[in-house]
Every structure is written in C-alpha cells, then in structure tokens.
Image (cartoon, rainbow, N blue to C red; front, side):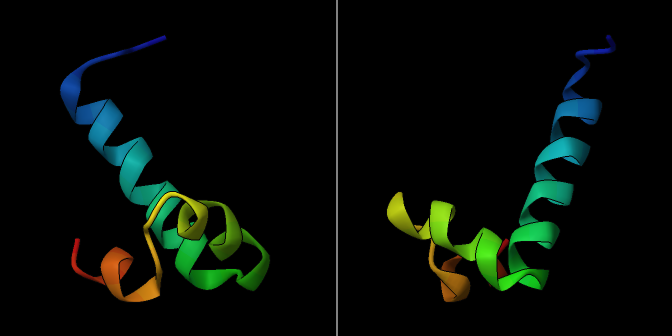
Length: 42
C-alpha cells in the first residue's frame, strides 16, 4: 500500500466527498464535530 502524503490526502478528500453526498455517511463525522458546514470548509 502506498502511504505517501499525497495518497493519504486523496483518501481523506474522497472520504469528505462521500460524507457530503450521502445522508447516512454524514452521521459519523458529525459525531466528531464535523457537520456539513465544517466539511464544506475543506
């Protein structure tokens, strides 16, 4: 597995996009303080 900084950032970006696109996936980040508005800041 390629654990370069670039690949980690890409993985994180994809996770954020998924969380924003699927209602069910917004629940988990929200539990850690990352509501929709905060996720859109990225």
